[in-house]
Image: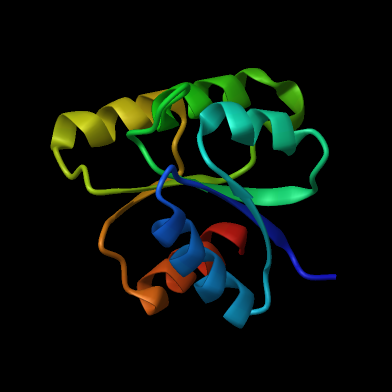
Length: 121
């Protein structure tokens, strides 16, 4: 059974690119359109990792990370930010919220997969 990874992004094209990259590497993928959608799908999934954008409607990436970290069942699930934001203060805010890692868009598929393999061990 392949590991399941949730990708959260309000951009359909980014979700498709991330999903394609993950599926090609043998992962199962759950897609969510924003943080609110992700929280709704998290309980019914067996996600081993979350890859989330920062800037999204309804619930942004930082809010999603805080909500996930507040749930004891998901406290230790790896969460990687995949965003256009690269400012040090945004990265620190993500880290403070509980992000495991940070990848700046546009991403290279090999780079994304290397981070996933490192984080999932």
